[in-house]
Image (cartoon, rainbow, N blue to C red; front, side, top):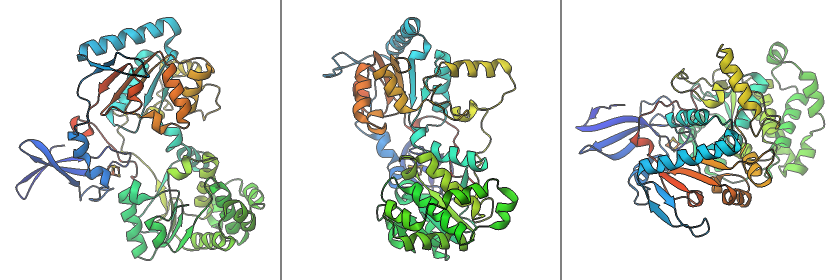
Amino acid sequence: MKGSQENNKEYIRSTCRLCYNGCGILVEMKNGEPFRVKGDPIHPVSKGALCKKGLASLEYLSSGYRLTQPLIRVGSKKNPQWKEIQWDSALELIAERFADTKKRYGAESIQVIKGGAKGISDVLLKKFADALETPNYTSMASICFVPGEMASRFTYGYYAVPDFDHPPRCIIVWGCNPESSAISIYNDINKAAKKGAKLIVIDPLKSRLAQKADLWLKPRPGTDLHLALAIAHVIIREKLYDRNFVDRWTTGFEQLEKHVRAYTPEKAANITWVDRDKIIEAARLYATNKPGCIQWGNGLETNLNSFQTCRAIAMLRAISGNLAVPGGELRWAQPRTENVFPNPFHHAQANTGDENHERLIYERHQKSLSRNDNLAPFARYVTPPRVVKSVIRKDPYPIRSAFIQGSNILCSYPNSRETFEALKMLEFVVVTDMFMTPTAMMADVVLPAASYLEFDSIEAPCHLP
Ligand code: SF4
């Protein structure tokens, strides 16, 4: 977006796209070129804050390691040699090879893989998959936000985010270190703590936030589900839950009460290695200092039992009466940009009213790698392990070719060894990236990608209550 003049300096207002948070940035221009990046103080979510990664945006932009020309591999995958080719030749080659794969094995044998959110280019990638007629489109969502989103939607129908503006009287930071991963949230938490909010940090590592916390719980990794159920046990046993909310808005509370009876703090202490008294103290602090909120993070979602863990935490929000209250947790609502910016995840779920469109989505899904994986009906992404298994074990059928956009799957997918084997076995791989990553080294064709500062897009930050 064209920016303003300030102190005789020209700024362009934009959004950092180096992660999902979408912090507001001001790009200072000098002689028509980006010169410096700083936080945009009027951005409603980030309020001027930028993390170190965002501040280094121009280093990515001008890095000498950037790819600038399409490359074709001429050596083997073990000893790759690279030859520069023109864009037209690269695109022709890609079109020919995908057409050939489709003719010989069917469109579903082509896998389209996306990395982190890249705004409008994600939409175009989904359209590319649709044009290829492959139902096999995947991202890292299943080990990122999907367990939390699914758990929230199954429990209370929407994704809730903390309302730091009012502010909360108790904050639980669970499985995340926002100082590193979401700087605006880190600032919000600190502000609320200064105003007197009780701070509970649940993290095996002693982050700076953990050092400042009123209570730091240090669970054995992978045991957060037991911890959440033990906290629910204490809240229910000591009758600290919000009776009014429970009576009015919940079903199945008796079953929950029965279910958590076995998860005593003593039992949880053995499993989680968190002191029994600290579990009880956390439950009391959260349930009696209202409004309260739980800022969760990927530490839960990249772990064992991620969906059920998030579900147990979602229930804590509900029984404590902290949903839909100022200073508690509010419904996350993106600005309505879906017509121009459809999230493929939501798009697949949307009832367009067009029967042909719905039938097409259904028929495509019937051919998807994940059709028998018992995913939620609105989950149309294929999960990364399923992609890898399909290549290696041909289960349920083999993927032969892949188009990978901005995703270094050798480093980001679970089980790098198997992912490496899968990349070796694929007959044809295209990678688009800004840099020659380990994954790009396994490609047949590498296309240089633009930085987020080099193309127009429409963005919506993910933490907008
Ligand atoms: S937290 Fe904000 S500044 Fe940092 S990478 Fe993400 S969007 Fe950019």
